[in-house]
Length: 267
Image (cartoon, rainbow, N blue to C red; front, side, top):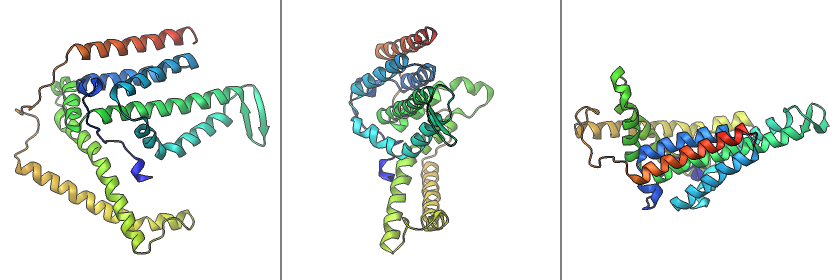
């Protein structure tokens, strides 16, 4: 299960999506989320699905990588579907004790599950096609106006990027610790909830120690390289937005406008 968590991973490539400016992709993700939460019917959700499939095809990211990243969310998806299925008012189709299934509940459960899956896949596509360094630069440039009110933009962007980058590292470290503890006879699969929680202590303690050690090593390395924040720093790769970026932003604005138009017409 841990190996299925792909958030924060970057798949190098030379596709159109990979070559886009990170600022363009960040704005596109925001517009995508706006369109996704504005879609209220099958037609508007179908438009969002079609756009996501188109973007995945352009990025040449294997659908299996996206689906593998969805596996850790199975419990959340099932819980969301059940809550919307049993606790939505409408025309009752079946009822047992305090549970009732309505036609509107089925529709809402399917739409909510679809929304969660599309939201996760869309955000995964951002990290899959954007390196952590480019993502940091894009976030910093987008938040640059906040510097006028003394917000530490560079430090915030750096922390977000480091946290995102360390997710795969910590997952790999957790998998190694679990394998080592199982080799010593640890059992994580049997017992009640309390016993399983206690069994996690031999995993959590070494994981926290490893995380703090990595953080200290990273801080030492940055200090040895005379890192002093964003003031006066230059970039090896200067971000520039070209015609493809403008076309991508216009495309996403049209998608959001189309979703709003369909929602206004009840479609």
